[in-house]
Amino acid sequence: MCVFCGSNSGYRQVFSDAATELGDELAKRRIDLVYGGGSVGLMGLISQKVYDGGCHVLGVIPRALMPLEISGQTVGEVRIVSDMHERKAAMAREADAFIALPGGYGTMEELLEMITWLQLGIHKKPVGLLNVDGYYNCLLALFDNGVEEGFIKPRARDIFVSAPTAIELLEKMEQYTPSHQQVAPQKAGIWSNSMYVVLEDLLKHCEMVPQSSDLSGLSRLFMRTWASVTKVVAHVIVMVELVGLVYHEQCGKVEVAIASPHGARFLLVPNELI
Image (cartoon, rainbow, N blue to C red; front, side, top):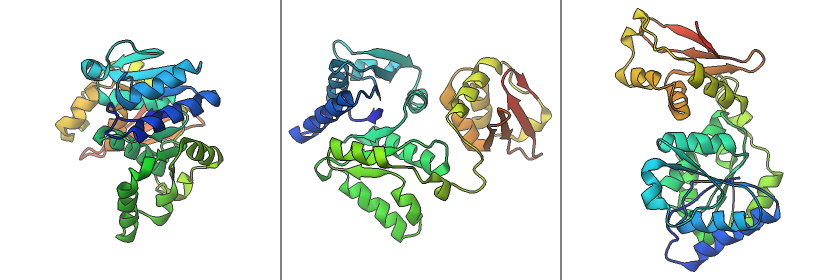
């Protein structure tokens, strides 16, 4: 279970209690934890509870945030990454489901990205919102307003679940089947967990930056992203969001459509660039 939560504890005890309760429930169910790697705030509370309960804890943290989010000893396995994009990609890849506890901008951004990926069919993993003492009521109301104003499809509004307590939320998530097939665009392509494996292969084996004249019309942003595909999984994910990707599960090929003025198209497969 990937849990997004704050590096602060909030002003009220109810938030710390909720993090502790969720940690206890995960341990009781023998569910391992993936989280942001901090030892302070709600992150520190839930990671300690899950670890004390005998389950595996994986913390993923950018090097730059270590002085801010780690105080004293950490628990479990700590994976240090280069930036926030790589952190989110690693957490998404390692987890089978996602829960958001109360938190600030970062927590909400992580939650919304996982909901968006679910809507697009990028993953099929349950997403849950732990709405402690109504903390997320305003966010849920914003989603409802998005439906009323025509920016969120009614069926997309219910692709994640929410509950006020850890027990209720976990029970809902155990019974829930994501409805992304009814929500994702028809031309979104075929996505699966194995997509991440293929993307990692691309990182390891695409050692060259294309110099084709067909790339002359690409933006500087895309060229920088392309140049970094040998380094960071998240950058590849950003790249495919920018230009479009279809993963063909049966043959294991990744087809990337590059939006150059010439309509250039490359077929990317592990170990080769055609």
